[in-house]
Amino acid sequence: MTMYILIIVWSIINKSFCSYKVNTKTQRFCRNEYNLTGLCNRSACPLANSQYATVREEDGNCFLYMKTVERSGFPRNMWEKVKLSKSLEKALRQINEYLIYWPGFIKQKCKQRLLKISQYLIRMRKLRLRRQKKLVPIQRKQERRERRREEKALVAARLDSAIEKELLERLKRGTYGDIYNFPQVAFNKALEEEEDAEVNMEGEDYGEDEENEGEEAEEEIDEELEKELEEESENEEIEYVEADSDLERELESESDMEDIEPKATTSVKDNTRRKPRLEIEYETETLSKNAKRTV
Image (tube, rainbow, N blue to C red; front, top):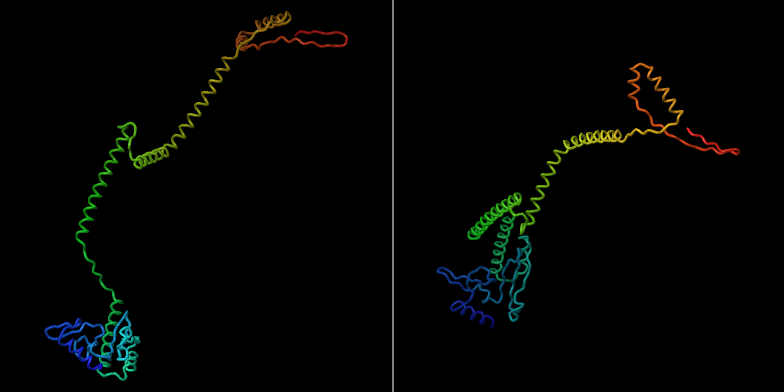
């Protein structure tokens, strides 16, 4: 019964329409993923054969797919999937074990397909290990757009720097007087530059200022001493005190003696200053009487 169904299926595919069939001038090809050879013929068609096997590659691994008549009624479980070894010899041995009673055509084509798949997997591994040049497409429009943006940004930067310099010069000249709506960052930057310049100038003049200050301090000390001496000389006053009769006699006798001495001695003594004399009164108390003495 199944043989008649498969013959009817192939007659429809061969003479009429099939979605997997591709006609060319020389041959007909099959695009079904389970096809062994890629050709559209009776022995290689997976739809017109109830017992069929093929080899497929998934993520670098080879698998053997097998279809039997017993599972034809269950489309979900129609294909049996068996993973093959990466070693070619072991994979061929597995194919011989699973397809021991299958037609020789299917067995031979599965081995050929396994050999081709293993060969292109080896070439893929070698290409991955080699250095390959990566081709990057050039986007002309994007490059032109970026170039224009760069030019505009450069012009804007030059304009900003020119405006900043002009404003700083006007600020130094005092054109505006008070500052209104001036960029705070540029203002702070200008102040920092001026402070640095002042610090450098102070560092250079520091040694000279110390020497000048030392000399000025010595001169001030000398001037203060001279002023104090002048004030003391001005404040000195000669005081005269009345003397008693005895003292007057003594002074007269001394003046007579001075007249007798030579003129040289008189000239020296006249230059000397008289010390002021004071009158002191004191009392002494005793048991018998009080005494009062005057000097």
